[in-house]
Image 1 (cartoon, one colour):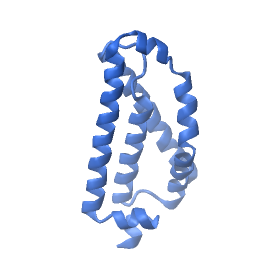
Image 2 (tube, one colour):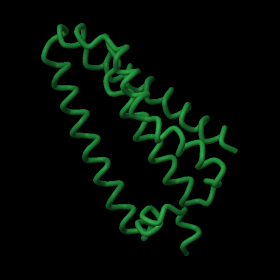
Image 3 (tube, one colour):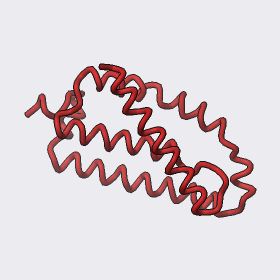
Image 4 (tube, helix red, strand yellow):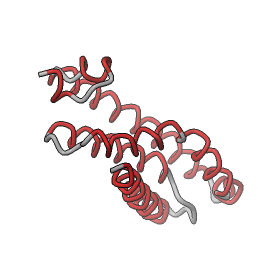
Length: 135
């Protein structure tokens, strides 16, 4: 069902926000640090593992695809609610955390892409079909 895809996204978002809050408190910033980005990385990882194990049904994938198309407007709306001025006034550690999280996300995306190409799932992603259908 489409609602399962939406539930998967919601779970990833809640966990990402929680981890972003924890990361912010660990570095001494009273703000969420990278929670939405962490959530998207969790969603990509969950989607990949569910496809790999054959648990991602087409109906579930529709829910994930819908929110993937809505991702940019939703992220812009969520980012607008965060208090960036307070984070920057907290000191240079906030900027360092921002650049560090971007670099970490770039590295993780690179690792995910390499893993996809090694398993042969790249053809499935390009064809827009689950990997199980192409085997």
